[in-house]
Length: 446
Image (cartoon, rainbow, N blue to C red; front, side):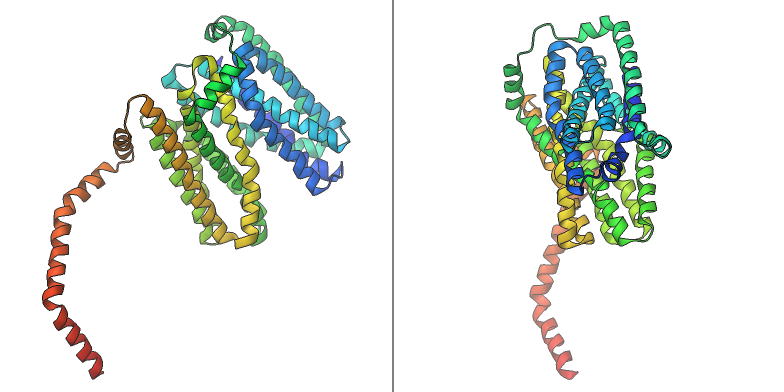
């Protein structure tokens, strides 16, 4: 069942990205909406995805994962058919919001079911495979969509809708086949909405993780907003460079995710977040060094490695918090972090206009470092409840990041450093006046 859900992630992302990247072009050139209207339509998708996750997750805890996934898939299908039929601006706003809500209902619920059916120590690997599956869909989908949109135009939305119908019936078949396993994972007692909200509202660790995630998604969104804007305006053949960077980003995730996940499984979760954020931040900072392709390739390599660490590990941290009866709601609540996909492009555009490209990348890299603080503080609160103090966490992080040998070497060097400082201070007291007199005499002679 988990393998099928991973296949489903590839299938749905491929189908969706066959048509969604061309929605802006369709709204602009065929429906003739203004740029502001097009931007508002696209923003409604992000808003629906951010706000709908909690309620979709809660309903999956209450009625079962399979039921919510099936209903949301069929509703999602009609959104794509609707994009072809709609001609009115308000209709597109409603469809875009519904699209975001359906995605928010389906994806956290699918992720929660994967976690239900996987033992805890294997969940990081499953989350990593899921993230790889998303990237495979994001690579294949636009390639197929380019051909289809040039061939059949807006009817590409119909092809996407038909593929969603096919997958919906495949899902129903698999849910029936593994009904006993799925039923075994469902909480026995009904989950009250008021109690669910109370539990999540009181979980301060989750709140800090969501805030850290908002910053992460805001910084990550620069890859799809500020970077193409900068490359198009600042360098020759910027469009070709951007296509290369996007392809390299996706292929790196597909190729290196299993290797990095195997390494990360042996480390502390916070250690992975810290290392990932440092790579993420340095990658963006490198963009400020010039306009050569090698600089952008180097920066993309670093922030992609950071991205590979952060995405699955952040899901693992939320999973550690989630009580079994509230797992769907926890995963859905974590979707609030995707609000960062809304503020990120706005902040990047404002910085680009106010301070220019080089400083914009420096500021963005500094903002990225704040991800560490929110995740670290939230993790410290969680571990405190487990009876583990901050010093133990620090020791494990130092050990994971191979900083203990450096710390030990520095500690051993303290006596020698103290002696050298003392000798320099004594020499300054003994010979300072003579050196000063000699220096003054040499200057006066010249």
